[in-house]
Amino acid sequence: MEDFDFEVASFVPYALDQILIVGAGMAGSLLAFVLSRAGYGVTVFDPHRRPPPMFRNEKLGDEQIVLLRRYDALSCFADVCWPPEGHPHAYPADARPSLTDCGAPHHAWLTSVRDAWPANVRFVEAAVDSIATSDDMQVVTTATGERFAGRLVVVATGRAPRLLDELGLRRRAISPGHSVCLGFSVALDSSPSVVVQGLPGAGIGYVSIFPMPGETRVNVFSYRPLDDPWTRRMSRSPLEALAEVSPDAAEILAGARVVRRCEARGTDLYRVDQPARDGVVLIGDAFHAPCPASGTGMLRILNDIDVLARTHIPQWLGSEGMARTKIARFYADPAKRRIDRRSLSISLRARGSKVGRGPYWALHRTAVGVRSALRTAIAAAPVRRAAVSRPQPGV
Image (tube, rainbow, N blue to C red; front, side):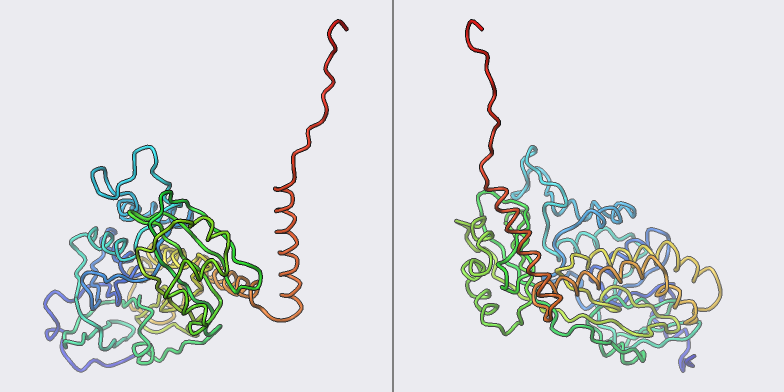
């Protein structure tokens, strides 16, 4: 327990909120949405009032849609993916894709979620300088010197190594330089929603092609390093470089024109060991980062929010104190552990299947290649129709 050396009166007025959220990315913004609609007082800290463009989650899956619908947050995403009639990028009424078949820029989703915050969310446009915790009251101090108190701090930013150090937390590297995600946008007459594979041995996980309002998005999940010559070619001439590793993608994108330059983001797999601390909980990438190619990043965020909002925060705030023994229950929750383990397993297996060394992975790739060749041969084989005996005239 830490002794505070200043009086409550020295805080910003009305600063005794119950929950302080550090970081207003997808995890922090959605958690603020869910908790505030449940009646909690929430203060959110982030350096950017309006989120800048960023290369992050751009597409939803079935499980994510179920969780978003549970908290009445799905419209924040649907309204961006499906612009209303009269919008320059609106889909024709009879040609609107399903939510799992289209996407939207990450910052547009974030803006929509923040705009839907109720009045009991207070946004503080500032970086967080320090977090002081105890088993009773927590204090967040911003870079501008303002101090805010609350019963619980939620760290929801993956880019806060200094804050983790201050809390005595350490990240453990699981797979450094695990993958690289590359994304660019094209103009295309027909915008499909497909996933295609790379050539065997190309070091590519897969290529996801899907419509966004006004453009077609192409995301490439690669296990080549950021400084690989092919990765550098992608940044300069993405269509040409993509054709080198995925002829199927090149065929789909024939005639396309690049309208948004290629961005690249590297991922290290890590997790925080022994994360339980008095008064503070980590969610999303602050606790554990999966590989984007696993398709589980958004699911992990939503699952963390679901487990916190439905089970643990009501229990924590319903009794005295905020000791680490309380906080530890979140990390041990079976629903959280199940999704975290699944995310890590998919991430490691996906990389191993493409670039893993040793006899197991070599045999695995051979088996996958044989299955793929068989499917191709069966699909290309001519259909043989059985001869049909027809009665002769007069018989």
